[in-house]
Amino acid sequence: MIGVSGPIATLASVAVTAVIVGVLSMRGVSGTARGATAAALAVVMLIVSGTLPDRLSSRGTIASETGGIAWLPFERAEIARRISTGEVVFVDVTADWCLTCKANKALVLDRDPVVTALGRPGVAAMQADWTRPDEAISRYLEGFDRFGIPFNVVYGPGATEGIVLPELLTADAVMDALHRARTREFSRTE
Image (cartoon, rainbow, N blue to C red):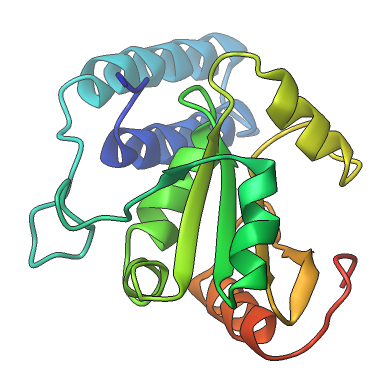
């Protein structure tokens, strides 16, 4: 699948967007100067983000294409089957057009300790790709009263209803949910 942008380009775009917002909110500078500076930064962002590599190469900080997460395709019925065998299931609802999803991937999912934890035996990483409309994924989200992404849930013998993670993931939140799902019952509203 061809992505909209790689994780590095996404992070650069987010950083430049923050700078643009800062420039536009500056007081004491004429509106013309603010607008011209913001426009110039936007052009630079478009040019540079298209030339940035998709992966970092520095000592495995971000997983390589071959060493990353082995995502299973989303199948709702498969979640219950895997839980019944004692597995923990991490569900990632994502899309190529979702910049927050890409940031979560670059900053949390493709980094240790999360990438290692999702690759361990007894843990299944399942990805629901919502790049194009998909009725099954829409119904899944509606089951949690959600209508947008990113959306991540961890299931397991100790969390058969799922542990809903925050939209902006942290390694601590993911690791804690993986541990809790393996050990004891939690409600999905926690």
